[in-house]
Length: 194
Image 1 (cartoon, rainbow, N blue to C red):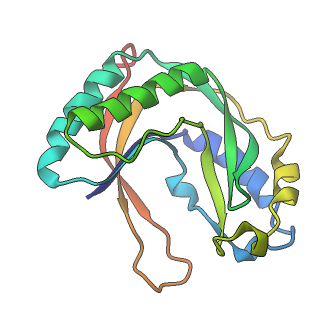
Image 2: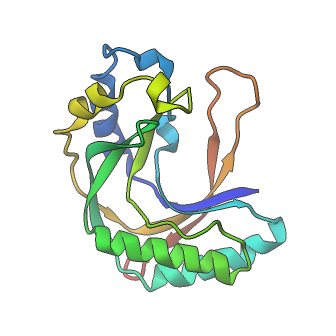
Image 3: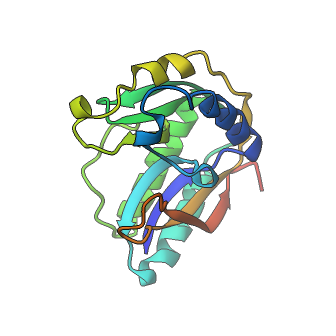
């Protein structure tokens, strides 16, 4: 099964961000972008890829330990950015140091559970919003107006109380507009949140 560890913003944070994204609908190229599904909005801390079912209990146990060692902390969705003009994302503010530590623990849990993770990349807190359909940014939609439209976005703060292990079910190939479906495998409370 295809798994990742992440933080799920509360519905109120997603609603705020959703209203800001809705205000972008009249910008050029809106329909040409592949927008992420709002029910699945999340902050990915560690992507594990395909995980054998027999490895899930150990991974879950190790994630639970890492979550238990992390105290609840506050975050907010703010601003925006891009990765090479290919994808648009919402930024994160608040206790990003605690978020980064939780991401390190989630990655370590995967390694200790025997999963072969891709090379370590510097964690950059973000929530993916949209991608250019064409992988070459130069031939895709210009994301600059979207960055401007979200530059002043500042959502309300919320308290992160759990680390979530999520299964990502990829959409059926060839179905236009199909999006991944996400299901919670385990919701693991942070140290002082249980």
